Amino acid sequence: VLFRSFLLPPIPLHALEVGWQASSAEVAMGKCSLSPRGHAISSIFWSAVNLAMVIWGVTEKMRWTPFHQEMECETPPPMPTRLSTLSLPSPLAEGMFMQPGTAPFGLYTNMTTSIKCTNPGQASITMKAVGSETTLLSPNMSDLAVGGYGLPYSTMGKVVMSKDAHFAAGGGQGEMTTQIRIEQPLADVLASMSPAATMAGYSPSYTRSSQIIETCATVLGMTTCQEVKAEQFCGSYGGSCLTEVLDSSGKALVPVQLEPAICGYTRSLCGKEEDVLKQMKPEALGIQVLAEVPCPAATGLPNGTMCNVILAPGIDPSTRAPRALESAKELTPEAQEEQERLLAEGEAALQTMILAAIVVNAFFFALNVSLAFVCCRRHRHAKANSACRAPTPQVPTLMTSTASGSGATKAEATKPQAPALMSSAASKDEAAKRDGPEAQSPAEQDDETLTVTI
Image 1 (tube, rainbow, N blue to C red):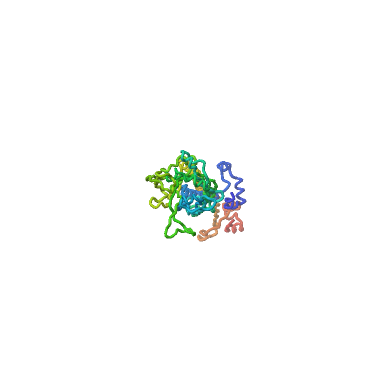
Image 2 (tube, rainbow, N blue to C red):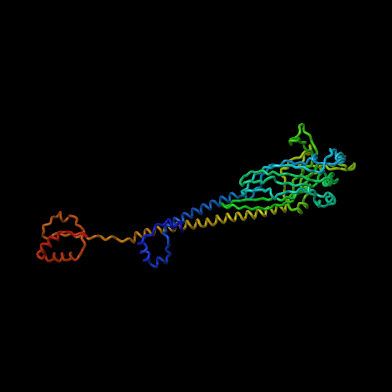
């Protein structure tokens, strides 16, 4: 209303008088309080705004297609746990061909890893360090030996983030830096070295993670952020391997020397705990048994005990060196279905909002264009009607006369005469003419030659 009031010219006072005299028929036809010109300008302006919103909505719809895009991360390097960090008392250390260690006995080590990722999606992602933690779990080998799931678990260590990792929308890059703190007492280490695990050539391990993730999305200029706590249970298989010996600076020795370590053999299967425990099978994750050979004496098993020679994605079959896994994680069918359901709900809500904005603005665009067309026609008709209703100017009456018997020349008779207004005096002159020049006084005869213009 304020916009329209600035566009309209001031209403003159005489127009108010004319407005009071408007007929009831004009009022019944719904005459606008604003002029058609003002309505047309306003409708054209708002139709342009609606068209811009429609174009913006279509652009947003294209920008959010596809709705979800996975993070693109570098292949994480293998992280073997070197047995040189294992501290064993004597004579246990000598029996495993190792040097005796010092208290506390067990496996205690810290490792740091960094992974760079790119976010191709349209929502920014921030993984927060505070409140995020991953617990490393070791199964109960005695329970596994009798066909159980390895309950109860024992804690091997923790994995925490050093700082928040932020990934901006539309190709933002960031780095996740994590610290792995392994703290496994000697009793738990010895329990994990069960004869069954040694003969099989691999053993399971589990993780329980809790991650605080904040996502922010901008749709049609409106930014919305949401913070969620994602919890997940994962399981994988690992076993013995050989890795390079490092110097005090963390670089491999030259010439290369190898030492025994514990490496991850397979990718992780993640989902709910009960689903992971039921579906976690070595064959499904890529472990194959190539052959059976007598177990080495270092294992402490009786002579003639056969141990498996395995092939796994995370270990080189010829050198027994660890290999990087291209796909570090996969979801259970239930977790995958749940993720797809949540993504479908989010996409439906987003697309509905964008589509509603497009449809509403398209409707008002068509409406404003129609109103502008109608108001322009009314404005033209109003101008034409006002021209037709204008008063016709009166044509003045030209009175020409010649003095009877006065000897007026033909040139004088053809001279243009000034217009004169008919009056009662003219009637008297005509009567005087009928009576003849004798009936007129000299003054009247002189006046007859004059032309009066009013």
